[in-house]
Length: 128
Image (cartoon, rainbow, N blue to C red; front, side, top):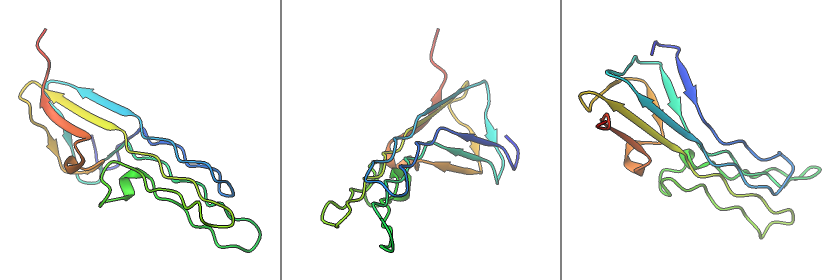
């Protein structure tokens, strides 16, 4: 994948003035004899942001999607039900799996979710 290449399976964000939750990220499966991604490439399966629950002049307070939350890992943040107009929760991240004949890939670009979430794997191609 080149510097401007992009593969996304992101969850949808809730409507701005709603208490709806964000959609979860989808799944990306890449299987090839070799895989390389240059710096600037982008593969994401992020969760969508929750609705702001704002009306009129009230300031929106969006819940982040799953990939935006380092402490919570793969889960989206909770909505805030204590507000006058509640907010929706953020969607959880999806999954990325990359399989090659050697079990390794050259990935210099941006991938989300992070490997530390357990939602991204790189390994050998499955045996036939």
